[in-house]
Length: 427
Image (tube, rainbow, N blue to C red; front, side, top):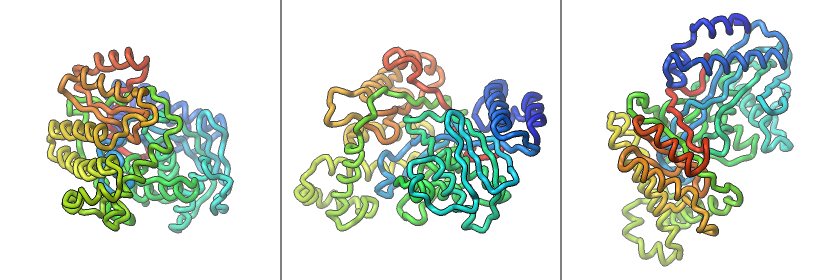
């Protein structure tokens, strides 16, 4: 459709039902999403000229639900897409040039026939585009030039993985324009990981891309590095009576590299004691049977506690998925709380050890405990040490919860979100 047809259909309500489903909202709450799509259509043509055939795409941010710091030890995780996303208007341009412009950034331009790694592009968005295109080209798809304009409301620095959403939206656009949507959501996620690891030069797992691409709730077991077991968990959170909140603690994110590296290093010290590369290869019973030997050899009690967290939380992530599949939301909430306690007590990633007086996340968790008063659930969200807390809040407490959180942490620090049932998609 051209821009006029798109806008007429959006404004007439033709897409209200679809938007309501994608963004997990009521039909009368879709106006802001329609206005956003109209803006991205207009921006495409303002920057790249009139287009006879415009197509619209979306890729969501994600939230980690279960499995805190388990992925790098090839354990299990539970993640979900959320109702914050990157939207893209795209059209072929009849050349061999790919031009992608994201709101607030400068345009990235590349040639579809030049898809080798450019080391000068490390850490730049253009490298992600080039890497995803390379994956499609290697699968035999004939690529041509195209123009894209994107807009994002995925919060940066909040553990929602805006980079993964960008990789997925690029893959979804290319899949729609040149591959007849033949490439699966799982394959698009793998393409995103490849682009980030090889072309962007950043080590990462597959959880972020998989949650964004597949959508809804995704259970992933990384036991096999080459073939992780990915399962979409069908659960309608809109009927759970709870809302998802991501709370920004306001903690300083600077100088945390050593804290994150220590988690992996200490867990590996335990696995290496048993002659294994990662903890998922260590037998739990063998670990506990030889605990005294582990302690003497490793010489680091925190490493042992972090290993205990891994063993328990990777099991919990699987149990959380089963609870949702069984429709047992109370059990799910119980497991979420247990995961949060484990992160605080054993994984110990709530505040940075060199700064024991700076405990914004500890305070946010304490506020969750007080305000929820035994209902709902809460836990650290993502890497920890600074950043965000995740809470599942009963809907009848939601206004109070946000008001009180913002009063202590700052206005707008509590974000009310929803689990989105759809991953990367075309409208």
